Structure formats: structure tokens, C-alpha cells
Image (cartoon, rainbow, N blue to C red; front, top):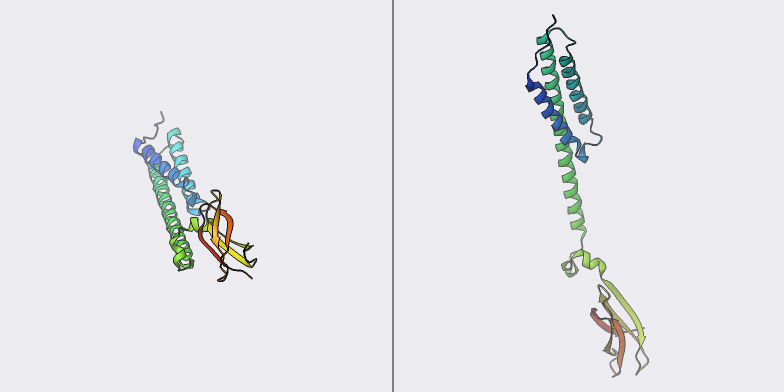
Length: 186
């Protein structure tokens, strides 16, 4: 009569825990291309194969089989720990790169009152310069204004910038325009 090797359930539980750790690691996009994760996968596969051989009873010496299972599980735990350390190093390097990039972008921003406007709104601000002729003196004038979003047009009555002229310009500009000015044109 041949005796089957005696394995405790702790080896199966340990393998389940190591396998779960490996699955959690593999879900992170930071493990792509990391050789440590490949080594951990191979070590867990080896531990699974040793445990499978132990349950089929291919080996005759129960103590030898249990020692092989313990060694395979220890190697797989070490490999998964190394892979986890690799992922943490990768995460730290990625966070540092993001911080450095954000700092670089922040330092390149101009230092002026314009920076008081949030960058998204500043990006959507449109400046317009329109050359028109004063109806009274027929000299050129430039209407300057800024707006963020076109909410409609409205007629604005503007003073001619030429000192001797008392004429008024009627010009259609966006309702939400800001910084409206009329300057002498060329």
C-alpha cells in the first residue's frame, strides 16, 4: 500500500494569498514591461506545479514533498515582494515626474495681472481690433475689445478718439465684451 503525502491546508491558503497579491499587482498599469512581475508569475506557477505534483502523489517521500512546497511558496512570496517593490519604485518615479512637469509648467507662466484669470478662461479670451471711420470727421479709428463667449451683439455708442471731433461711432460688439476702447487709427 502506497501512502499519499500529507499536506496541510496552510500551503493551499498561502498559495491563494500569494496568487491574490500577484493579481492585484498585475492590475496596475505600472507593471507593464517590469521583469520582476514576470519572475513573480513564474515563481507562482512553479509553486502551483509543485503543489499539484504533491496532491497527485507522484513523489514517495512526504517530507521531501512538503519541503519542496514550502521552498516554492517562499520563492514565490519573495518574487511577489520584489515585484511589489518594483511597482512602488515605478509609482514614486511617476509621481516625481508629474510633480516636476507641473512645477515646470507653473514656472513658465507669465507673472502679470493676466495670471489672475484662470488659465481656461484666459485661453478662451478673444481680442478684436476693428478699424472703422468716424461718420463725422471720416478719420480712421480702431475699436478694441475682448470677449470670452459670444452671447449676442449689441450696438455701442462710442466717442471718436480724435480731440477736435465731437462725432460718435455706433459699432456692434458682443454683449459681454470687456476692455472696450477706441483709439486713433492710421
